[in-house]
Amino acid sequence: MKHADGRNLFPTLRDTLLGWCRNPFVKLTLLIIVLLLFATGGFWFFELYPKGDIQSAFGALWWAVVTLTTVGYGDVVPATTGGKIMGLVVMVCGIGLVSTLTGNLASMLVEHKAKKRKGLLKVNLTHHVIIVGWNDFGLELISALRDNGVFNAKEGGHQSDLVLVNTLSSDERETLALQIDMEERLRFVWGAITHESVLLKAQPDRAKVVYLLSQHRGREAKDADQETLYCALSLRELAPQVPIYGEVALPENRKHLLRAGVNEILVHGQLTSSILGLIGVNPSLWTFVQELLGMRGSNHLQIQNLGSEEKTLTWGELTARFRNDGRLPLALCQISKQLSLEDVLDEGSALDQFILELFESSGQETRLGDTGPRVLANPPDAERLDQFDAVLFLKAGETR
Image (cartoon, rainbow, N blue to C red; front, side, top):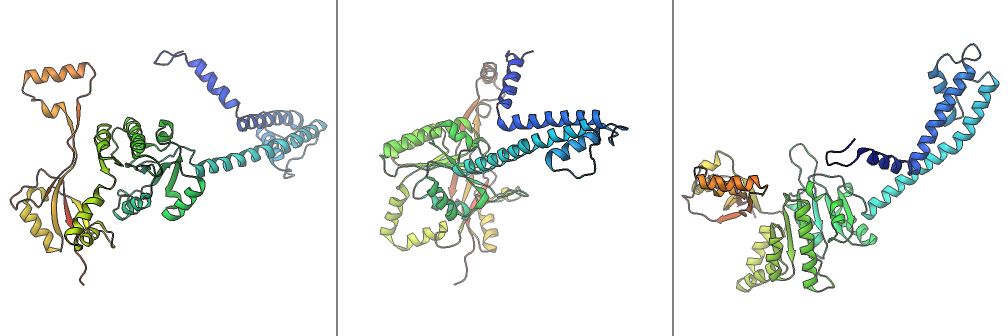
């Protein structure tokens, strides 16, 4: 008997069974089952009515289980010498087997909990947030994700869990867990972020979003960016559809990360330089940026998807509607979309259709990449909204 790929099925089953049998817990369980069957058969043979009080095989099984796991309830007592000998065998063997089984089970639970605490286990999560790597600004990122609702659940679901993939020490992880304060919703995966086996434990293909942090502390920026690049390549292969955002230490490496499939990359310190330039014009501009990003309290900058009715409006009409409840629209957004050959080629052209058929028959992907998000800030009042997906706006501020 063979698999679809031609491999023989029997060696595979044999190897699986042998693997189970090497497990001490499985061995003990099998021994207990054998002892129960032996005790049930023996007691039923010796104590079957009228020699004893047993009238069915189930009664013998009941006696075997009770005698093996406890000292017995006294509801079934052996009346024959053979039955009493069976009772002695079951009690002597049961004491050792059951106590060893429970001890092994407790050890397995303790070991599992220890591995989980050390970040050595594969997480079993979906729709979670992953942060790969760690630096001094990791806590600020988590705080921003929380304030901006990235951990918020979809309708009817639970809030998203957070998985941190890094090589922090046990003490650092404990301190970090206290600072983040997400209890069971926080998981760690320990290991080098360039190892695919480590990334696999975080289940990136089932994640909501992945963030890459540059680990440049105490090392050269070039080496840190190289590590981030290797990690990005592995992540994109493991999770082709999941959005990945990250940072690099050197501006010249940004294009390499984008080529590796990262959706967006920030250069470490680039925003700092721009904001310092704003402060040089007027210090109040920095206060304004802090208000926008929620660094001085609640986040004023928000985004809202456009409904089908709103897409029939113009920018001027939408602005008037938003201003009625105190909101101030700033820009229109077009969400990143996948671009394929079907979108580029003409359906009515025989040549274009022939090209498309050549790609499909050879098994080549027709996907060309994504168009990237588009933002149109402060558009003219006559701008139609049917080509846009969302609107960026400032929520109403408090009266002061």
